[in-house]
Image 1 (tube, helix red, strand yellow):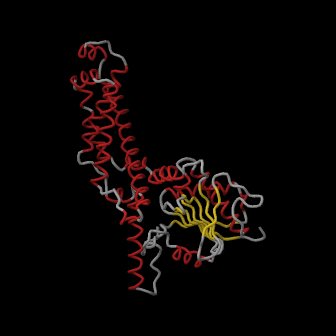
Image 2 (cartoon, rainbow, N blue to C red; image 1 turned 180 degrees about the vertical axis):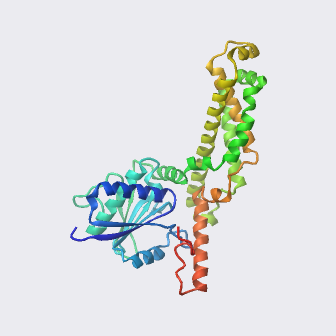
Image 3 (cartoon, rainbow, N blue to C red; image 1 turned 120 degrees about the vertical axis):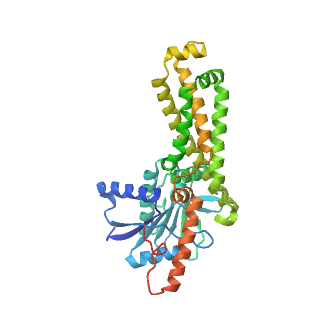
Length: 367
């Protein structure tokens, strides 16, 4: 590179923003791209009425900053011709759009760094990634039609299931582990009920009588019950008219269901471990042996914790919810997409009332 290029990086709040921050922190230690001056902008990218990214607004942000290129890191899934887009490059606009969920569940930062700097190298050279001496090992480059000039996109190779990778990436972006911490009320109710298994000998006897297969079926039943309760009670099931085409709706709903399954599964695991530790501390081995009439092993304690965790999960499922409305709104892609539409409408209303003022990227509130 003969000169410095200024790059605006627009990242959605949440995992996209965190991943970009890690990429930039690592870059400070490795100045191999020293001719690129990167400016990180944490903004939720607005959507058009058809559910696609509002590129006009983003171009205006970059134009104000006098940036040479812009990189958009979004949580919105994107596709073309049945293929899942990981990266889209628009050479005339100097823009790269990276869909973080399409990069998969694991190695998010590593994959994002490769996609980001491969894209910037391609924009500077005005050549598609993989041409000339450059090679990419994470996807295949495809040409696409564009009203603004030549564009290409990178999709998963045929031997990698792009849609499965996308759904898992969407679940990762939903951050189910963080969702567990937002259900402290549910965990408290479940723990209080599960604790009965430590103190009531009838539950010890029942746990001993039940086979592992039956205990497993009980576990599956209570987890599914809690997931359905959260899904229906919080209206997390999306309809096509809310988020776009039936195919898009299926992706959103699949990621929501898997996110809730992981969240409830993690909550169940925490409850199981807590009850197991409590039972080992409280229940004396000889007393349990006298009660159930057999020699006691550690597996008896495991069975008690297993059954008690299922009991507690059932209790937690009744009336279960997240600690606040914001937690629900930030849980799934569908809810966050609805927020984008509301923010865009609010920004449009404020612009019509005060056309001379800058309403900001999300209706007056800069994130």
